[in-house]
Image (cartoon, rainbow over all chains, first blue to last red; front, side, top):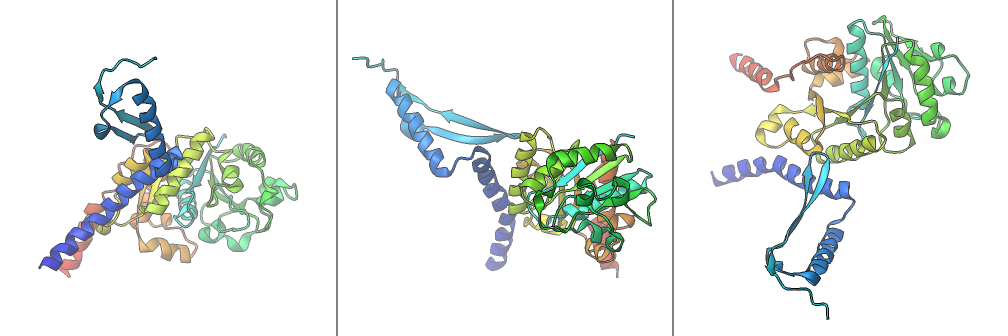
Length: 88
Length: 262
């Protein structure tokens, strides 16, 4: 019975797996960004921003989402405190 | 007359471009429209066998382009449908024999003769693809509900946009309703959501497609087969009619009920 249940749940997943995998692949294909490059871009972005404000790195969310046939880069970067720029 | 040029493409091979081209041609010609289809797959001629016209070829696409014959001489006239013609691909190995501007010129001449020009694109994203896209007024992208076909379709849709031939419309071929119900196949809705273009047809996976192709008698001639109905519906949508999509579920339920009754 447990095997039967397992079989049913596994089967349910394959179309979902296909859809989730495709979502990611299409984003990388469309933006011509590999996951590594995306990670590098995220880090550079954060580096630039942290030069100006202090950010809460643990809470940062940077993602690329599909909006119709357009790709959107969404960045949710909480600022830890409003520190003034250190000019000196 | 000034024909509408419709190019059928896919990126990935083997998803049903040629079958779709042949069936849409039959479906349109069956309603009295004058149709000429062009096999754009230079070196890998196939639309002729799918249409059952392989024994009638004298001249081909490259013969017209290189001036060895007149356009009319290369148009094979179908014997079943008054208004159906085919310009076959050449079997030459030199794919550079045809350029995008050659195709535009040829289609401009042909436009005066017919109502519809349907061009069967080769697989891939190289010259052959660009040749068939260049003269298009409308582009149909054929895909299957499988990861590789959907991925390639997305690539091709992007290239069609870049060539300013978009937005392309989508045909999802070989849809298996039983697999979808089990959760083992992407549904038409899933594919449309991923590719984000307008859907123009859903073709159910139907053994009749193989049987009719074996005979060179496209399934669109058979008004009782599910795939045949689906192709006729797409032809009607191309003409601007608002035709609801087939309810594949309802049909399956009816069939399974009939089986149970036996």
